[in-house]
Length: 372
Ligand SMILES: Cc1cc2nc3c(=O)[nH]c(=O)nc-3n(C[C@H](O)[C@H](O)[C@H](O)COP(=O)(O)O)c2cc1C
Image (cartoon, rainbow, N blue to C red; front, side, top):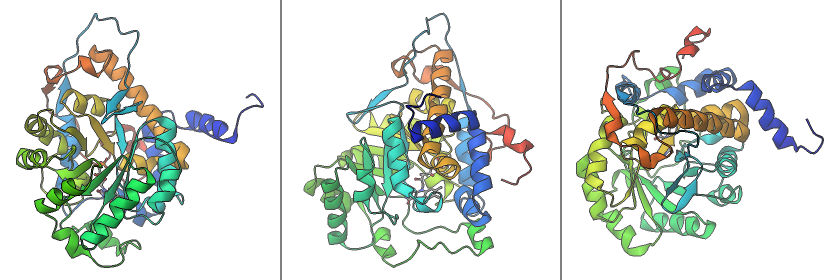
């Protein structure tokens, strides 16, 4: 190594050697986190059916690759809502980032900025959104759980605008907090779930969206749309991004997998808003499937946390580098030099080869001496 390298560059190089496949990052996160935090991270609601269906819905899509198209240069970059990105990935909002790395949102923002992807910051965060914004440049979205009256929401939006956030997000799949049975069984009481105000979130309805659009120019994202009907209403309300999500299987149990919902939402939105999706996305092929199906942006929740736990902000960058490499290879092997060359005709249905599980994207983990 040359003497001119900074400490960060050396750390990045170390992590490139240490983590050569995504499952190695997941494994390192498992080693680092205690049982309660691990179960909180990977778990879902009750039977975890929605959680498993997220993976099942991705694994039920197969590719129809095209060949002989000169694949020497493949570009996996994208522009989403006017923001140029190295990969169309959004680090999804996580209401407890500090439990995976002390620097929480600051580390995530630094990683998003260094790599070139978006960050959506949860309001359930001990580090103020202003401090997170200062940690890096780039596409950032402030996500709020409404815990007070309209003045509470206005104050948060105004802080987000002042701090330079590019959009505001309401998470709309959380009228109440679900029963996460891993946490219940562990008697795990989340230290960050303090204070009241949950009724304000439960009371959210379309008049709040109307009110927001009248008051603010800052683009709004609705996260947690799971039907074409709500996608239609969202677009009618002028919502700028419709975000298909079931909260990583952590809210309503027995829903459909997110990828299964995507086609009807893309059709309902019909290009009038950006479309984002999350839920089980773990591989480059997963990203390619969603973009081919019409999504603009893919959220990663647990993958962000694995990266953070495994190596702080450099761990997240390494996770993104591996996703980028996989995406580049997948796109090239599918026969497209950019996302402009892929569409639903390159996808078809197929039976998954493995039983779905929160870890089924990483079959090599099974060889390890751990329960996941
Ligand atoms: C530990 C954890 C905390 C989360 N906290 C929030 C949150 O505060 N706000 C929110 O909108 N979604 C939250 N989510 C959901 C994620 O934003 C995202 O929708 C989900 O993790 C996507 O699925 P994936 O983990 O399979 O990528 C959380 C998810 C996890 C795993």
